[in-house]
Amino acid sequence: MPGPPEGGRALPLTTPLGLSSIGVVEDLEMDVEKRADKISGVPAILWGSHSDKIYVCVHGQGGNKEEAELLASVACRRGWQVIGFDLPEHGDRKRGGSAFAPWHVVPELSHILSYIKERWTEIALFASSIGAWFSLLSFSGETFKRCLFVSPVLDMKHLMANRMLRAGVSEERLKRERSVPTSFGEALSWEYWTYVLDHPIVKWETPTSILYAENDDLVPFDTVQHFAQKFNGAVSVMKNGEHWFHTPQQMDCLRQWLDCQVKHNE
Image (cartoon, rainbow, N blue to C red; front, side):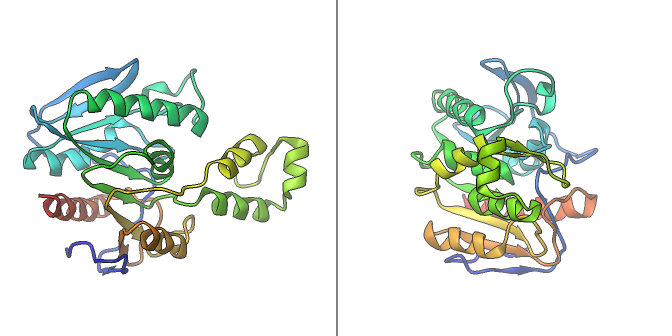
């Protein structure tokens, strides 16, 4: 599979994919050290032998720490360690505790990165779907060795505005009612909307490769292209792909892309 194009140019890939939160590969064959960990009480898994280099994995909605195993199967044999952790309301934290909202997730991610910076010297970032947006909010002042985004949510204002339009909910109504249920399962929140307006993404200095699905119905390609052009990213497009993917064939193709990116980082 070809490597990332330069200058944000879209690269058609021949294998159909789609992804959001990344599914866990069943029966993944890998001879990699793996141990459970906790970072200030947050459940985590660390893969790989001792190294100064680590990939930090931020999952999307519906994801969990185990999703990082796919990246670990590729990166650990090239001298990296990989760490994944459960964000609020996910994985081993589904019951109780903080909500899966940026005002809880962002401080938590900042704390986790501080923990990691004390223990590793070379840090790369991997994030999928809304995990990418959380990462942009949390790490705007950081520069990683490399960043990989898969089906990333990059413009939450645009996404929420579209959902408001789809639900027929005006900003005035949302302000008045504070929370409005929708037919597509997720309530619109005035608190969330104002947070998004108050926290635009204006800075990102890490070289970033993005894997985008051609038929992504959540994130428009124009949004990804604009981000890549503004922040000097590179975009690969998965032909016939969707936002979320989980089949063995799709996961195999994602693994090929990851392998290409990790090699590119050597």
